Length: 359
Image (cartoon, rainbow, N blue to C red):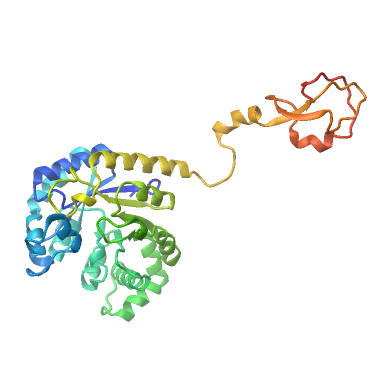
C-alpha cells in the first residue's frame, strides 16, 4: 500500500449479480476511474448464513422479500475458478485485486491460492473472534472495518488481532488477547499491520449518521492508520474523509444503480466513481506539508500585491514625513509599508512628486 497517497478501494462487492461478465466490466470501470484496488466478496452461502435467515431491512427495500437471505446470497456467489479469472483480468488492467473472505475456506483460498496482499475484515466479522484470529494468523496487513461497533469492541478485536499477528502459542483467551494488545510488541505490530476504517453499516447511511469525526476518535484511541468505508450517497463524504486524514477510502460502485440486487442503489455509478477518485487526488495534493510558508507560486505575486510607502502629495527636501504626506499603495517595488513608523518623523533627503515611491 502506498503510504504517500490515499489508497482508493473500489468496492465491487456482489454488484456483479453472480455474472462473471459483469464482474469483468466492474474491473474495467474501476481501472478506468483510477482506483488503486477493486474489491469483491468471496463466500459460500452455506457457510455464511442459516437457510431461514431473513434479509436486512435495506435488502428487502431494494429487492423485495420474496426470498431468504440465503437464497439471495446463493445467487451472488462466484466460484473459485471465476476468481482466478478476475485476478488475471485485474493484472491485465493494471489494478490490484482484493476480495473479502467471509468463511475459513474462502480465507485460505484468497491468501494461499490468489496471493492477496491484504485481508479485509468486514464489519460483521469484527466480533467473530475465532475467524478474526484465523485471519490475523495469516500474517498479512489487515484493513478492519468498524461498522456497528463501540470503542470497547474495537479494542477487543485489535487485541485478538495482535495475539494472532504475534503468532502467540498461548491458549486463546480474553486475558491473553489483552496481554498481547498492551504489550510493546503488540502495539508495534498493530501499528505496522492494521488500518482501521470508520464505517456506518447502513445502505445508504443518512448523512446525519455518518459521524466522520469518529475518525479522529479512532486515531486518538488506537494510534493506527485510519480510513473510511463509506456507504453514504454521492462523493462528498469520502472527499471530506480525505481532508480528515484517511489513508484508505473504500466505496461501493456499480455499472448501473437500477440493476437488480441489494447494493446497487447505495453505490456510485461509473461517472461518480471517476469523479470521486479525481476529487480525492485533488484534495490530498491540496493538504500539503503543513508548514505555513509562502508557496513557490505565491512568491512572484508578493511584490505586486503588497503595498509600499508612497508620497501622497508633493514633498520638498527637508520636509518631515508624516501621516499627511505618506500613504501606502501597490507599486511592485519600494519600501515596505512595514517600515511606516520608522519613516514617519524623519526628514526627506530629496524632493518627491505626488504618487512617487519613497525609498
